Length: 309
Image (cartoon, rainbow, N blue to C red; front, side, top):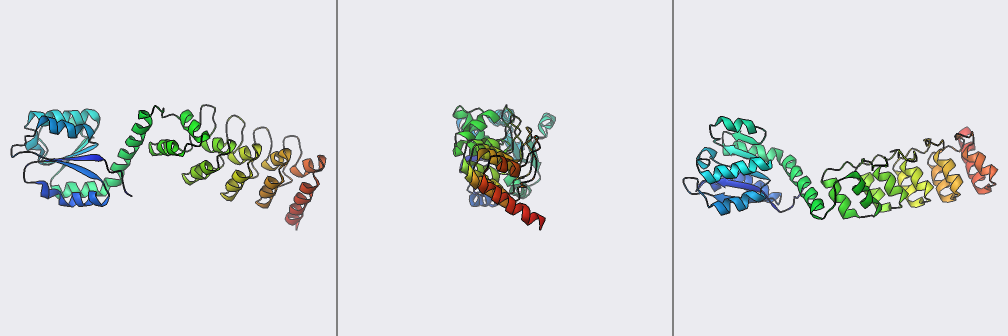
């Protein structure tokens, strides 16, 4: 996976020790991750401006020979700044100071550069996932987009794929529901957003989620709104075609009511039972006969006969 080429990692190391991190630099180069390197003088001193300019953008920091670096007041200030921002700092030769124990979840100590580099390499996907989530969230916030399920649902219904991708990247649950209790896949189905339906399914959306408002699953919403292309996608992904809605209707009865033969054929060909009864005691076949939908009667009877054989 290639990560965004932003300055996410900061390396602060004393003079003439940059080469110690050749292995880590190589790993970052392969992953297209930029590491900003600040080399101090022999006493660990560095320009305050250069230090703070780099620290402000850092998501993670590596401090080599930290006991030397932290003798400098500017470096101590920078370390406190990073701790305040929640930045994880990886250290070799950590200073012997009990106050740092309060930040054990942010400060990680290693006995050698090799051990530090190996640990970062092993956990790099986890570290970068955190950065990517933060970047996605920052992108939404900078555009005035609230990170809420209701706002996510708005962009689903508006077919705004870029914004929806940012929501997922920022950590929004693909199976979240809006304030009315309607899942994102239900919303995409009932608003006729075919590409969004496919995208949500690819990201793990629950194909049989039940909307709290109507009690419909996504395939029911697509039937209700007469969207045969979406019905087909959901059917091919294994949607339950014999579930009963909260008002007592199975999908095929709903489809007969809409009178769309294409949808009825899709459903019955993929396992929808024409004989399942609704809350009124009527099946899809019963309704087709009642409303004299002869083509549907013939279609349903053919599949009933197949099941009986």
